Length: 273
Image (cartoon, rainbow, N blue to C red):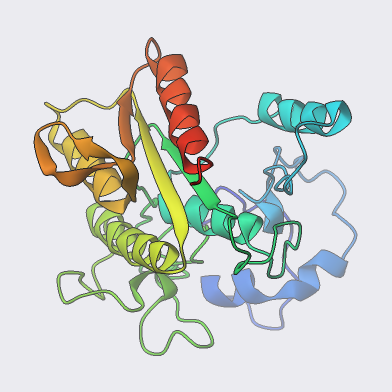
């Protein structure tokens, strides 16, 4: 009744006639009730699993083995766009996947000599987190996503919500707008990029179909370039005193060639004296 997209299951019978939206949302007892006769059917992904229906991550595979390469190909084919764009979350899971630490342990030991940990970040847009104007209801202030609801605090987050943790004073800690969420995600992204690079992870970033003349796209392009690692052997064509950045501003027409350049970069990393 509050207009929430995942409001479809009847609430637990309350002894009060007017439970608050927050009480209704957090009460898990409702899921132990039989669905009332005649109630509407849930849409795909509705309920407590709303927006949590993406396929699980595929662990590292040995693509020299046909069966394992097919697993990768099938996982790519099964991908479908849904929800917002959260570059730091994607980068974080990429880092976890190539690491030898839990939750994925397929990667070689992090300190193994001659082993390069490489994460390629490909995105077609700026960071986004959907704002919701529900301050008078459950006070979620956003749809539920990787950082939870932005209007609520969580164990360990202190006095601010998770998305705003460890951000600068440029981020309004009680400003619940899409623009402020994007700014917070951008800061989280740069912190994560820096931490990954300090841990000797090679970060390559690829923007897809972003325009340098659009202000929002330009900001995303600059952020992706700043996130990327330096090339170990190529120089910046505009300033040969600096290393080239491992960043590509690609289009659908150039993407194949761009990934050939990435492959060449990785091949050069294997040349040892």
